[in-house]
Image (tube, rainbow, N blue to C red; front, side, top):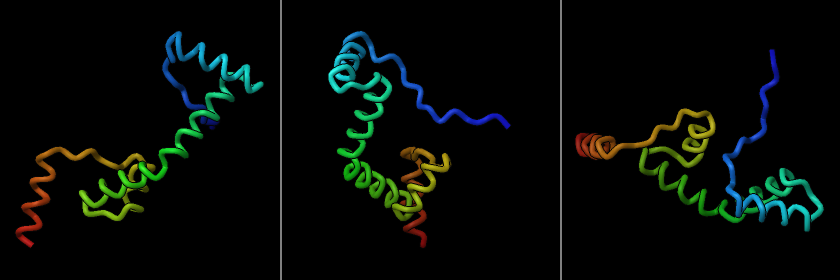
Length: 96
């Protein structure tokens, strides 16, 4: 079975950001992909607490634990909620 490519494909950065990445990579003695990887990881670390807060909010809205919500998202099984879904959940809570 062919090995799946785990590389992340990003759309074009545009001329301005591509130039900035090239300059930043050169200054840090890295290739553009290495520097892009470093920058993305750094930004995700900065946002980790906020991401966790948002996961908790979405989990509560669906009646799940944050861990269940994370696992659904990572497994590709999480569904976006429509306004109608929220109304249906409120009706279910009133009936119970």
